[in-house]
Amino acid sequence: MTTAASETPPSPWPHRLAVATWLAAIPLLLFGGTITTLEAGMAIDGWWILEPGRGDHFLLFYPFEKWFRDMGTFSEHTHRLFGILVGNLAIATVVVTWLKNSHKRARFVALGALLLVCFQGYLGGSRVLDASPQLAFLHGALAQIVFAYLAFCSTYLSPRRQGSRAARDHESGRLLRLTFTALIAVYAAIFAGAWLRHAFSPLALGVHIGLVVLATWSVVVLARSLKRRGVSDPSFRPLRRAALWLHLLIGLQIALGLASFWVVVMVAEKGSTDVHHSAYPTLHVLFGALVLSKLASTTLWARHQLEVEPSPENPARSIGLEVAS
Ligand code: HEM
Ligand code: HEM
Image (tube, rainbow, N blue to C red; front, side, top):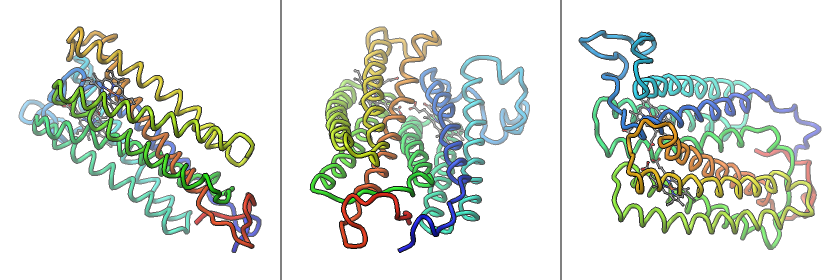
């Protein structure tokens, strides 16, 4: 087995670029959510050539006076431009990972992010050519997976993740099961949220709320277990921090859900351009994605720190010498 001391330190650049891709996806989600909230999905005609027959502008050279003509057009065009930025950063991550990281799995994790971003862009492009609610729903539901995968990818490529490992004990299996359960429960709630957002009905609302209760319970149980497990072990700092973040994010998400319910159901202002009203559902989309991405990276940390079986070469609680594959 190789030791950290004998390996050249991994290049920080694949990780940096993966983080930049994830960060650039935050405004992408915000502008995407704003388009749906304002019901402005058809604000601009055409995909790569905008307003065919009435201007024929190439996507990158859309005139300023048209771009800024109203909030819907502004959000739609800015969303596309951030899509292009995220796509280019994902390409850069793949290129640099293939050049600087010799681990096959790391290279394919980066490639996976690029493929997901391309497919998501293709769905978005298809949606602007066809005002289909099904395409809009699919684009919204997949966006959350893409965002969480970008977080997973940046955690995977993190040189810090390759530093320390803890051995499996009797609680490890339970913790790993809890992380997977929370991940699945939260995505189920998100999926029902996308259904609710794109085809509002009392049934969708009921299913969303039911799954939200399940998701909240699983996240709180997970966060408490991570906190308990991490009390005395310094190598568990990332998991302890994750527990704190999960509590905070899920609390904010519930508050934003209640505010969205107030806007969408009580005041029935869907499509309103009032900034206070449109902000809650849009932020609810973003915070749903933040909860899911925190869970994706926590699952990876948990797998990484809990997967090693005790052995003579790797005794329980020996931390810090292995380099992850
Ligand atoms: C990686 C790329 C992309 C991501 C992560 C992304 C993400 C999102 C998100 C989160 C929403 C809001 C969904 C909701 O609130 O339920 C959205 C909406 C939308 N996006 Fe994207 N998007 C991407 C690329 C694109 C591209 C390239 C286009 C167009 C060329 C596009 C066009 C749209 C449209 C038209 C909507 C509004 C759909 C509707 O509700 O009718 N997206 N996007
Ligand atoms: C674990 C907590 C929650 C999560 C993860 C969550 C997630 C989501 C997501 C991601 C969406 C939008 C999906 C999309 O279009 O991409 C959504 C929509 C929605 N959620 Fe939640 N939600 C949570 C809690 C709540 C709560 C407590 C309520 C309060 C009743 C609520 C009410 C709503 C409403 C009304 C919408 C539709 C908004 C619209 O049509 O613009 N959510 N939820």
